[in-house]
Image (tube, rainbow, N blue to C red; front, side, top):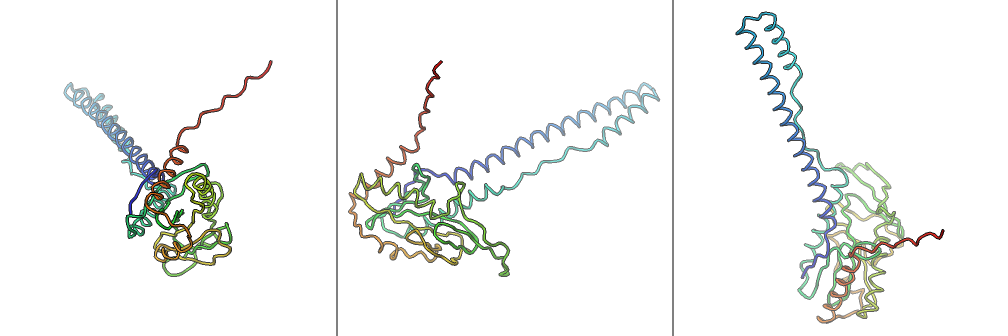
Length: 282
């Protein structure tokens, strides 16, 4: 299987968050070293004052300098910085990137007739992976969820159990920032891609699959499913998924689909010109 990465949103976000934490730690470490140096310079100044007063046999000045040196010592050392751990958002991005990597590794068993496109984006959002080859086009939404996943139509939620089998979290909604469940999120972008391909390369159907990539993901109660397949990564049946397609594409047709997808992605990644507001009539 060949691979093509159009964008790597999850990896970029995870890397940016990690780089920000590292930059914060470096800045804090530099400030810490500066504070240590300033404190040591202050102590050295007081020590020199004590020595000078003692050499000059200035008893009261010596006592005053010793007192000031003691106060400087009691001020305490600045606290060494500790690099903060990844916050929830960074963990989510890193987990998403790991999930996409695992699915790509699973699909790598396919022959070179197949192409895996990662990070395709259109006006409705991003599709994690688009698989295209002799049996057609397949859009894949990947979720890295530790728990039991349920859905009813486009409403999705999960239950989480601890290592002892105790239920610790229930009915946790699964939705993106727009409130869309995984199937709605996938279908919005896949519908638009399907319409685009039907007009340009005569591919009338984009099949859709939601894949749960976490090792502890399990399927729960699934009702009224609005995509072609929902599966954990270890139970993803490619032959069954491919059998849903009545499309047969030769090598040239696959390349045309690929070029169309790249062109559409590039168009949607371009900065959109700002619309000028009409001047108000006086």
